[in-house]
Image (cartoon, rainbow, N blue to C red; front, side, top):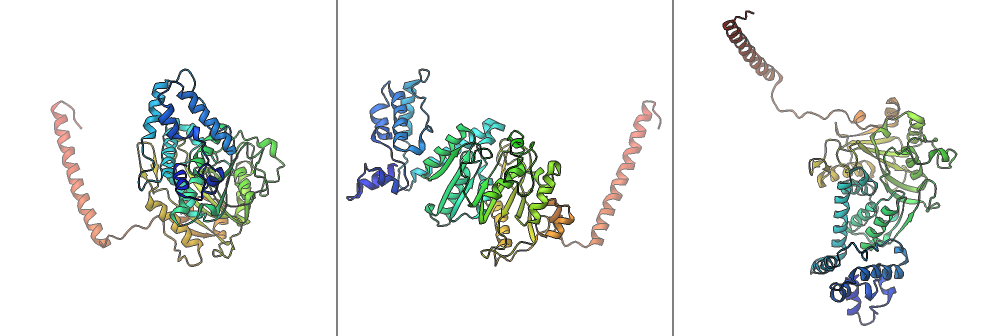
Length: 461
Protein backbone atom coordinates (compact mmCIF):
# COMPACT_ATOMS: atom_id res chain seq x y z
CA UNK A 1 0.00 0.00 0.00
CA UNK A 2 2.83 2.38 0.90
CA UNK A 3 4.50 1.97 -2.48
CA UNK A 4 1.19 2.52 -4.26
CA UNK A 5 0.64 5.68 -2.18
CA UNK A 6 4.04 7.11 -3.19
CA UNK A 7 3.40 6.31 -6.85
CA UNK A 8 -0.03 7.96 -6.77
CA UNK A 9 1.36 11.09 -5.08
CA UNK A 10 3.91 11.44 -7.88
CA UNK A 11 1.20 11.20 -10.56
CA UNK A 12 -0.37 14.66 -11.08
CA UNK A 13 -3.52 13.08 -12.57
CA UNK A 14 -4.11 10.63 -9.72
CA UNK A 15 -5.87 11.16 -6.40
CA UNK A 16 -3.84 9.50 -3.63
CA UNK A 17 -6.95 9.26 -1.42
CA UNK A 18 -9.26 7.72 -4.04
CA UNK A 19 -9.97 4.09 -3.11
CA UNK A 20 -10.56 3.18 -6.75
CA UNK A 21 -6.97 4.10 -7.56
CA UNK A 22 -5.79 1.37 -5.17
CA UNK A 23 -8.25 -1.17 -6.49
CA UNK A 24 -6.82 -0.55 -9.96
CA UNK A 25 -3.41 -1.49 -8.55
CA UNK A 26 -4.91 -4.58 -6.85
CA UNK A 27 -3.96 -3.08 -3.46
CA UNK A 28 -6.14 -2.77 -0.37
CA UNK A 29 -6.98 0.81 0.58
CA UNK A 30 -5.82 1.80 4.07
CA UNK A 31 -7.46 4.95 5.51
CA UNK A 32 -5.14 7.64 6.99
CA UNK A 33 -5.96 6.74 10.62
CA UNK A 34 -4.84 3.15 10.04
CA UNK A 35 -1.57 3.82 8.20
CA UNK A 36 1.65 2.77 9.84
CA UNK A 37 3.26 6.20 9.60
CA UNK A 38 0.37 7.71 11.57
CA UNK A 39 0.36 4.95 14.18
CA UNK A 40 4.13 4.99 14.59
CA UNK A 41 4.76 8.72 14.72
CA UNK A 42 1.60 10.01 16.42
CA UNK A 43 0.19 7.16 18.53
CA UNK A 44 2.91 4.61 19.42
CA UNK A 45 4.06 6.40 22.61
CA UNK A 46 0.54 7.03 23.94
CA UNK A 47 -1.13 4.69 26.47
CA UNK A 48 -4.06 4.39 24.04
CA UNK A 49 -1.95 2.62 21.37
CA UNK A 50 -3.83 -0.67 21.94
CA UNK A 51 -7.20 0.91 21.22
CA UNK A 52 -5.68 2.86 18.32
CA UNK A 53 -4.55 -0.41 16.71
CA UNK A 54 -7.98 -2.01 17.22
CA UNK A 55 -9.63 1.07 15.71
CA UNK A 56 -7.22 0.89 12.78
CA UNK A 57 -8.26 -2.72 12.13
CA UNK A 58 -11.93 -1.68 12.19
CA UNK A 59 -11.22 1.17 9.76
CA UNK A 60 -9.41 -1.15 7.31
CA UNK A 61 -12.26 -3.67 7.39
CA UNK A 62 -14.80 -0.89 6.85
CA UNK A 63 -13.09 0.21 3.64
CA UNK A 64 -12.30 -3.35 2.50
CA UNK A 65 -15.40 -5.54 2.99
CA UNK A 66 -13.57 -8.71 1.92
CA UNK A 67 -11.50 -8.43 5.14
CA UNK A 68 -14.52 -8.09 7.42
CA UNK A 69 -14.08 -10.16 10.56
CA UNK A 70 -10.58 -11.24 9.53
CA UNK A 71 -8.20 -8.80 11.25
CA UNK A 72 -7.27 -9.26 14.93
CA UNK A 73 -8.67 -6.72 17.36
CA UNK A 74 -7.19 -7.72 20.72
CA UNK A 75 -4.59 -5.01 21.31
CA UNK A 76 -6.65 -2.98 23.80
CA UNK A 77 -6.94 -5.84 26.31
CA UNK A 78 -5.64 -4.82 29.77
CA UNK A 79 -3.13 -7.67 30.03
CA UNK A 80 -1.10 -6.35 27.08
CA UNK A 81 1.79 -4.05 28.04
CA UNK A 82 1.06 -0.85 26.06
CA UNK A 83 4.59 0.50 26.44
CA UNK A 84 6.06 -2.65 24.90
CA UNK A 85 3.37 -2.60 22.21
CA UNK A 86 4.27 0.96 21.26
CA UNK A 87 7.95 0.03 21.13
CA UNK A 88 7.11 -2.88 18.83
CA UNK A 89 5.17 -0.57 16.50
CA UNK A 90 8.16 1.77 16.39
CA UNK A 91 10.59 -1.11 15.80
CA UNK A 92 8.56 -2.54 12.87
CA UNK A 93 8.14 0.93 11.41
CA UNK A 94 11.93 1.27 11.15
CA UNK A 95 12.52 -2.05 9.36
CA UNK A 96 12.79 -0.30 6.00
CA UNK A 97 10.29 -2.05 3.78
CA UNK A 98 10.77 0.53 1.04
CA UNK A 99 14.54 0.68 0.76
CA UNK A 100 15.90 0.72 -2.82
CA UNK A 101 15.64 -2.70 -4.43
CA UNK A 102 13.26 -3.95 -1.73
CA UNK A 103 9.75 -5.11 -2.68
CA UNK A 104 7.81 -4.31 0.48
CA UNK A 105 4.88 -6.54 -0.44
CA UNK A 106 7.12 -9.52 -1.10
CA UNK A 107 9.20 -8.90 2.04
CA UNK A 108 6.14 -8.73 4.27
CA UNK A 109 4.75 -11.85 2.59
CA UNK A 110 7.97 -13.76 3.20
CA UNK A 111 7.97 -12.73 6.86
CA UNK A 112 4.37 -13.92 7.18
CA UNK A 113 5.20 -17.21 5.46
CA UNK A 114 8.22 -17.72 7.73
CA UNK A 115 6.13 -17.33 10.87
CA UNK A 116 3.47 -19.67 9.49
CA UNK A 117 6.14 -22.30 8.97
CA UNK A 118 7.62 -21.82 12.43
CA UNK A 119 4.17 -21.92 14.01
CA UNK A 120 3.30 -25.11 12.11
CA UNK A 121 6.52 -26.71 13.33
CA UNK A 122 5.80 -25.73 16.94
CA UNK A 123 2.19 -26.91 16.71
CA UNK A 124 3.22 -30.34 15.46
CA UNK A 125 0.21 -32.41 14.41
CA UNK A 126 -2.21 -29.48 14.56
CA UNK A 127 0.09 -27.39 12.38
CA UNK A 128 -0.76 -29.48 9.34
CA UNK A 129 -4.29 -28.15 9.41
CA UNK A 130 -3.21 -24.88 7.86
CA UNK A 131 0.29 -25.27 6.42
CA UNK A 132 1.75 -27.38 3.61
CA UNK A 133 5.58 -27.27 3.45
CA UNK A 134 6.78 -24.91 0.74
CA UNK A 135 8.77 -27.48 -1.25
CA UNK A 136 5.67 -29.68 -1.73
CA UNK A 137 3.59 -26.72 -2.85
CA UNK A 138 6.34 -25.61 -5.23
CA UNK A 139 6.48 -29.10 -6.73
CA UNK A 140 2.72 -29.16 -7.35
CA UNK A 141 2.82 -25.73 -8.96
CA UNK A 142 5.91 -26.46 -11.07
CA UNK A 143 4.31 -29.63 -12.40
CA UNK A 144 0.88 -28.14 -13.18
CA UNK A 145 2.17 -24.79 -14.52
CA UNK A 146 -0.87 -22.61 -13.77
CA UNK A 147 -0.10 -19.77 -16.18
CA UNK A 148 -3.71 -18.67 -16.64
CA UNK A 149 -7.23 -19.70 -15.72
CA UNK A 150 -9.15 -20.59 -12.56
CA UNK A 151 -7.22 -22.11 -9.62
CA UNK A 152 -9.16 -23.88 -6.88
CA UNK A 153 -8.40 -25.42 -3.49
CA UNK A 154 -11.33 -26.75 -1.47
CA UNK A 155 -9.26 -27.14 1.73
CA UNK A 156 -6.99 -24.15 1.28
CA UNK A 157 -5.49 -23.83 4.78
CA UNK A 158 -3.50 -20.60 4.96
CA UNK A 159 -3.49 -20.17 1.16
CA UNK A 160 0.04 -21.38 0.41
CA UNK A 161 -1.03 -23.03 -2.86
CA UNK A 162 -2.22 -19.69 -4.20
CA UNK A 163 0.88 -17.83 -3.02
CA UNK A 164 3.18 -20.26 -4.83
CA UNK A 165 1.04 -19.97 -7.97
CA UNK A 166 1.61 -16.22 -7.92
CA UNK A 167 5.36 -16.72 -7.41
CA UNK A 168 5.42 -19.17 -10.33
CA UNK A 169 3.74 -16.62 -12.58
CA UNK A 170 6.24 -13.92 -11.62
CA UNK A 171 9.20 -16.26 -12.12
CA UNK A 172 8.00 -17.19 -15.61
CA UNK A 173 6.99 -13.74 -16.80
CA UNK A 174 3.25 -14.23 -16.32
CA UNK A 175 0.72 -11.74 -14.95
CA UNK A 176 -1.24 -12.19 -11.72
CA UNK A 177 -4.30 -10.88 -13.55
CA UNK A 178 -4.25 -13.98 -15.76
CA UNK A 179 -5.39 -16.24 -12.91
CA UNK A 180 -8.53 -16.24 -10.78
CA UNK A 181 -8.26 -17.79 -7.31
CA UNK A 182 -11.04 -19.70 -5.52
CA UNK A 183 -10.78 -21.44 -2.17
CA UNK A 184 -12.70 -22.73 0.81
CA UNK A 185 -11.65 -23.50 4.38
CA UNK A 186 -13.75 -24.95 7.21
CA UNK A 187 -11.64 -23.76 10.16
CA UNK A 188 -12.48 -20.12 11.03
CA UNK A 189 -9.00 -19.31 12.37
CA UNK A 190 -7.26 -20.87 9.38
CA UNK A 191 -9.67 -19.03 7.07
CA UNK A 192 -8.49 -15.73 8.58
CA UNK A 193 -4.86 -16.75 8.08
CA UNK A 194 -5.57 -17.41 4.40
CA UNK A 195 -7.35 -14.09 3.91
CA UNK A 196 -4.45 -12.21 5.51
CA UNK A 197 -1.80 -14.22 3.64
CA UNK A 198 -3.37 -13.32 0.30
CA UNK A 199 -4.22 -9.72 1.26
CA UNK A 200 -0.59 -9.01 2.17
CA UNK A 201 0.45 -10.03 -1.34
CA UNK A 202 -2.37 -8.23 -3.13
CA UNK A 203 -3.83 -11.48 -4.47
CA UNK A 204 -7.51 -11.03 -5.25
CA UNK A 205 -8.99 -14.33 -4.13
CA UNK A 206 -12.52 -15.56 -3.47
CA UNK A 207 -11.93 -17.46 -0.23
CA UNK A 208 -15.05 -18.72 1.54
CA UNK A 209 -15.64 -20.15 5.01
CA UNK A 210 -17.47 -23.46 5.26
CA UNK A 211 -17.37 -27.25 4.96
CA UNK A 212 -16.65 -28.06 1.31
CA UNK A 213 -18.50 -31.39 1.38
CA UNK A 214 -21.65 -30.17 3.11
CA UNK A 215 -21.75 -26.47 2.18
CA UNK A 216 -19.91 -25.95 -1.08
CA UNK A 217 -19.53 -22.20 -1.64
CA UNK A 218 -18.23 -22.66 -5.21
CA UNK A 219 -20.88 -25.12 -6.37
CA UNK A 220 -20.85 -24.17 -10.04
CA UNK A 221 -17.11 -23.60 -10.42
CA UNK A 222 -15.19 -25.51 -13.08
CA UNK A 223 -11.48 -25.02 -12.44
CA UNK A 224 -8.55 -25.16 -14.84
CA UNK A 225 -6.19 -26.12 -12.01
CA UNK A 226 -6.75 -27.69 -8.61
CA UNK A 227 -3.89 -27.73 -6.11
CA UNK A 228 -4.78 -29.22 -2.74
CA UNK A 229 -3.53 -30.96 0.40
CA UNK A 230 -6.64 -32.35 2.11
CA UNK A 231 -6.28 -33.72 5.65
CA UNK A 232 -5.05 -37.33 5.55
CA UNK A 233 -7.44 -40.22 6.26
CA UNK A 234 -10.07 -38.16 8.11
CA UNK A 235 -13.02 -40.14 9.43
CA UNK A 236 -15.19 -37.31 10.80
CA UNK A 237 -16.15 -35.73 7.46
CA UNK A 238 -19.85 -36.65 7.67
CA UNK A 239 -19.68 -39.24 4.91
CA UNK A 240 -22.69 -41.17 6.21
CA UNK A 241 -24.86 -38.16 5.31
CA UNK A 242 -23.58 -38.09 1.72
CA UNK A 243 -24.09 -41.69 0.60
CA UNK A 244 -26.26 -40.61 -2.34
CA UNK A 245 -24.22 -37.55 -3.36
CA UNK A 246 -23.93 -36.67 -7.06
CA UNK A 247 -20.16 -36.45 -6.54
CA UNK A 248 -19.65 -40.22 -6.36
CA UNK A 249 -19.46 -40.95 -10.09
CA UNK A 250 -16.77 -43.58 -9.58
CA UNK A 251 -18.24 -45.20 -6.47
CA UNK A 252 -19.37 -44.30 -2.96
CA UNK A 253 -16.36 -43.71 -0.67
CA UNK A 254 -16.33 -45.24 2.82
CA UNK A 255 -17.78 -43.05 5.57
CA UNK A 256 -14.69 -43.76 7.68
CA UNK A 257 -12.11 -42.25 5.29
CA UNK A 258 -12.43 -39.14 3.11
CA UNK A 259 -9.45 -39.74 0.77
CA UNK A 260 -11.52 -40.98 -2.17
CA UNK A 261 -14.24 -38.44 -1.40
CA UNK A 262 -11.68 -35.66 -1.89
CA UNK A 263 -10.45 -37.19 -5.15
CA UNK A 264 -13.96 -37.36 -6.58
CA UNK A 265 -14.92 -33.90 -5.34
CA UNK A 266 -11.88 -32.43 -7.08
CA UNK A 267 -12.53 -34.33 -10.32
CA UNK A 268 -16.06 -32.94 -10.27
CA UNK A 269 -14.62 -29.42 -9.96
CA UNK A 270 -12.32 -29.74 -12.99
CA UNK A 271 -13.19 -28.04 -16.24
CA UNK A 272 -13.15 -29.99 -19.54
CA UNK A 273 -9.35 -29.68 -19.86
CA UNK A 274 -8.58 -29.17 -16.17
CA UNK A 275 -5.71 -30.77 -14.25
CA UNK A 276 -5.25 -31.37 -10.54
CA UNK A 277 -2.40 -32.10 -8.13
CA UNK A 278 -3.48 -33.57 -4.79
CA UNK A 279 -1.46 -34.66 -1.74
CA UNK A 280 -2.70 -37.86 -0.07
CA UNK A 281 -1.39 -40.54 2.28
CA UNK A 282 0.47 -43.42 0.61
CA UNK A 283 -2.26 -45.82 1.63
CA UNK A 284 -4.54 -44.27 -0.98
CA UNK A 285 -2.45 -45.93 -3.72
CA UNK A 286 -3.06 -49.48 -2.52
CA UNK A 287 -6.14 -49.60 -0.27
CA UNK A 288 -8.98 -52.01 -1.04
CA UNK A 289 -11.12 -51.30 2.02
CA UNK A 290 -14.61 -49.87 1.88
CA UNK A 291 -14.94 -49.82 -1.93
CA UNK A 292 -11.77 -47.74 -2.35
CA UNK A 293 -10.10 -50.37 -4.53
CA UNK A 294 -13.05 -50.39 -6.92
CA UNK A 295 -13.11 -46.58 -7.07
CA UNK A 296 -9.38 -46.51 -7.88
CA UNK A 297 -9.92 -49.12 -10.59
CA UNK A 298 -12.63 -46.99 -12.22
CA UNK A 299 -10.52 -43.83 -11.99
CA UNK A 300 -7.74 -45.66 -13.85
CA UNK A 301 -10.02 -47.26 -16.43
CA UNK A 302 -11.78 -43.95 -17.13
CA UNK A 303 -8.36 -42.40 -17.77
CA UNK A 304 -8.33 -39.57 -15.22
CA UNK A 305 -5.14 -40.66 -13.38
CA UNK A 306 -2.22 -38.99 -15.15
CA UNK A 307 0.80 -39.33 -12.86
CA UNK A 308 1.71 -40.68 -9.42
CA UNK A 309 4.65 -39.40 -7.35
CA UNK A 310 5.93 -41.13 -4.20
CA UNK A 311 7.40 -38.48 -1.86
CA UNK A 312 10.27 -38.79 0.66
CA UNK A 313 9.38 -39.21 4.33
CA UNK A 314 9.76 -36.39 6.90
CA UNK A 315 8.54 -33.62 4.61
CA UNK A 316 5.59 -32.69 6.83
CA UNK A 317 5.60 -30.94 10.19
CA UNK A 318 2.48 -32.69 11.43
CA UNK A 319 2.82 -36.34 10.47
CA UNK A 320 5.35 -39.01 9.64
CA UNK A 321 2.81 -40.82 7.42
CA UNK A 322 4.41 -41.29 3.97
CA UNK A 323 2.65 -39.21 1.32
CA UNK A 324 2.19 -39.20 -2.42
CA UNK A 325 0.95 -36.87 -5.14
CA UNK A 326 -1.97 -37.72 -7.40
CA UNK A 327 -2.09 -35.85 -10.71
CA UNK A 328 -5.48 -36.03 -12.40
CA UNK A 329 -6.62 -34.79 -15.81
CA UNK A 330 -10.12 -34.65 -17.26
CA UNK A 331 -8.91 -34.85 -20.86
CA UNK A 332 -5.67 -36.70 -21.50
CA UNK A 333 -6.11 -36.44 -25.26
CA UNK A 334 -6.06 -32.65 -25.01
CA UNK A 335 -4.20 -31.30 -28.08
CA UNK A 336 -2.13 -29.02 -25.81
CA UNK A 337 -0.20 -32.13 -24.71
CA UNK A 338 0.39 -35.53 -26.24
CA UNK A 339 -2.18 -38.33 -25.90
CA UNK A 340 -1.42 -40.11 -22.59
CA UNK A 341 -4.77 -41.91 -22.32
CA UNK A 342 -3.23 -45.41 -22.49
CA UNK A 343 -0.55 -44.97 -19.84
CA UNK A 344 0.27 -43.53 -16.42
CA UNK A 345 3.58 -41.98 -15.38
CA UNK A 346 5.09 -43.24 -12.11
CA UNK A 347 7.83 -41.29 -10.31
CA UNK A 348 9.58 -42.63 -7.24
CA UNK A 349 11.10 -39.61 -5.45
CA UNK A 350 11.56 -41.30 -2.06
CA UNK A 351 15.36 -41.02 -2.23
CA UNK A 352 15.37 -37.29 -2.95
CA UNK A 353 15.45 -34.37 -0.52
CA UNK A 354 17.80 -33.05 2.17
CA UNK A 355 17.43 -32.84 5.96
CA UNK A 356 16.93 -29.26 7.20
CA UNK A 357 16.85 -30.21 10.89
CA UNK A 358 16.70 -33.37 13.00
CA UNK A 359 13.03 -33.98 12.16
CA UNK A 360 12.31 -32.58 8.74
CA UNK A 361 13.44 -32.87 5.16
CA UNK A 362 12.75 -30.68 2.14
CA UNK A 363 13.02 -31.02 -1.62
CA UNK A 364 15.73 -28.74 -3.03
CA UNK A 365 15.72 -26.88 -6.34
CA UNK A 366 17.46 -29.74 -8.15
CA UNK A 367 14.97 -32.27 -6.76
CA UNK A 368 12.02 -30.14 -7.84
CA UNK A 369 13.47 -29.68 -11.31
CA UNK A 370 14.20 -33.41 -11.70
CA UNK A 371 10.63 -34.43 -10.84
CA UNK A 372 8.77 -31.67 -12.69
CA UNK A 373 10.93 -31.86 -15.81
CA UNK A 374 10.39 -35.63 -15.96
CA UNK A 375 6.63 -35.04 -15.93
CA UNK A 376 6.84 -32.34 -18.58
CA UNK A 377 9.09 -34.48 -20.80
CA UNK A 378 6.52 -37.28 -20.61
CA UNK A 379 3.46 -35.05 -21.03
CA UNK A 380 4.65 -32.56 -23.65
CA UNK A 381 4.44 -33.14 -27.39
CA UNK A 382 8.21 -32.78 -27.89
CA UNK A 383 9.35 -33.97 -24.46
CA UNK A 384 11.78 -36.79 -25.41
CA UNK A 385 10.88 -38.77 -22.29
CA UNK A 386 12.79 -41.92 -21.29
CA UNK A 387 12.20 -44.36 -18.42
CA UNK A 388 14.88 -44.30 -15.70
CA UNK A 389 15.27 -47.47 -13.65
CA UNK A 390 14.52 -46.83 -10.00
CA UNK A 391 13.05 -43.37 -10.66
CA UNK A 392 10.39 -43.17 -13.37
CA UNK A 393 8.34 -45.42 -15.63
CA UNK A 394 5.55 -44.78 -18.14
CA UNK A 395 3.39 -47.86 -17.55
CA UNK A 396 0.61 -49.00 -19.85
CA UNK A 397 -2.88 -49.49 -18.47
CA UNK A 398 -2.40 -53.21 -19.11
CA UNK A 399 0.61 -53.20 -16.77
CA UNK A 400 -1.40 -51.38 -14.12
CA UNK A 401 -4.23 -53.88 -14.47
CA UNK A 402 -1.74 -56.74 -14.17
CA UNK A 403 -0.66 -55.16 -10.85
CA UNK A 404 -4.29 -55.21 -9.66
CA UNK A 405 -4.63 -51.42 -10.11
CA UNK A 406 -2.12 -50.63 -7.37
CA UNK A 407 -0.55 -47.21 -8.01
CA UNK A 408 2.63 -47.41 -5.92
CA UNK A 409 5.49 -46.09 -8.13
CA UNK A 410 8.02 -48.50 -6.59
CA UNK A 411 6.11 -51.40 -8.12
CA UNK A 412 6.70 -50.06 -11.65
CA UNK A 413 10.00 -48.19 -11.74
CA UNK A 414 12.12 -51.19 -10.69
CA UNK A 415 15.52 -51.05 -9.04
CA UNK A 416 18.02 -48.33 -9.77
CA UNK A 417 20.72 -49.33 -12.24
CA UNK A 418 24.08 -49.96 -10.55
CA UNK A 419 26.87 -48.03 -12.22
CA UNK A 420 29.57 -50.23 -13.76
CA UNK A 421 32.90 -49.63 -11.98
CA UNK A 422 34.94 -51.06 -14.87
CA UNK A 423 36.42 -53.99 -12.87
CA UNK A 424 36.10 -57.41 -14.53
CA UNK A 425 34.02 -60.03 -12.73
CA UNK A 426 36.93 -62.51 -12.47
CA UNK A 427 39.10 -59.83 -10.84
CA UNK A 428 36.36 -59.02 -8.29
CA UNK A 429 36.00 -62.75 -7.41
CA UNK A 430 39.77 -63.14 -6.97
CA UNK A 431 39.90 -60.08 -4.66
CA UNK A 432 36.98 -61.33 -2.55
CA UNK A 433 38.45 -64.86 -2.35
CA UNK A 434 41.81 -63.53 -1.20
CA UNK A 435 40.17 -61.31 1.41
CA UNK A 436 38.05 -64.19 2.73
CA UNK A 437 41.11 -66.45 2.95
CA UNK A 438 42.93 -63.88 5.09
CA UNK A 439 39.87 -63.42 7.33
CA UNK A 440 39.42 -67.18 7.81
CA UNK A 441 43.11 -67.53 8.80
CA UNK A 442 42.76 -64.65 11.27
CA UNK A 443 39.62 -66.27 12.69
CA UNK A 444 41.43 -69.60 13.24
CA UNK A 445 44.31 -67.80 14.96
CA UNK A 446 41.92 -65.98 17.32
CA UNK A 447 40.14 -69.23 18.18
CA UNK A 448 43.43 -70.89 19.17
CA UNK A 449 44.41 -67.91 21.36
CA UNK A 450 41.05 -68.00 23.10
CA UNK A 451 41.43 -71.75 23.80
CA UNK A 452 44.89 -71.17 25.33
CA UNK A 453 43.63 -68.35 27.56
CA UNK A 454 40.63 -70.39 28.72
CA UNK A 455 42.90 -73.35 29.51
CA UNK A 456 44.92 -71.13 31.89
CA UNK A 457 41.82 -70.70 34.07
CA UNK A 458 40.88 -74.35 33.92
CA UNK A 459 38.38 -74.27 31.06
CA UNK A 460 38.98 -76.86 28.41
CA UNK A 461 37.25 -76.64 25.01
